[in-house]
Image (cartoon, rainbow, N blue to C red):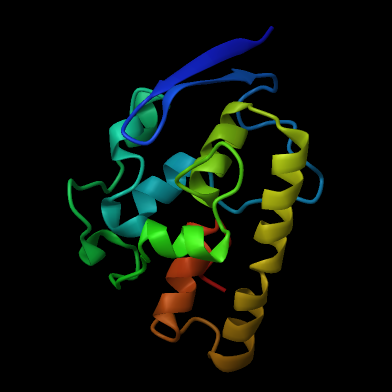
Length: 166
């Protein structure tokens, strides 16, 4: 039983996708995120300024305890540091892939919801796996339990759904 989601927001008009997997299930075996999208939003990611005009696309409950704002506010991040780069930078680097103009987290939200796009999913999962190197840097350079060590890398790990509390 599939469901079609119709997207109409500031960055996408008349885009639709089909949910073919149950929400939060049937993930690729190589993709094991530490947090769900609503958990990430509640912990504090992207300075509270992400998916704010997309709320109709995702379950209302995702936003119940989310740290969101109309403007970027680093104090809303879990580690209370600036963590964003402009979307233009993402585009220049080729980090915007396929039908997700807001990047990896938008892809993850849609994947979590049940959208499956084999080629795009494979690319994004490869990117996610490559990001694990940051966890290795924290393990190599920080005392265990010192969450003040490398807060920018820890925030980035959280924003890629890795456990920053290593």
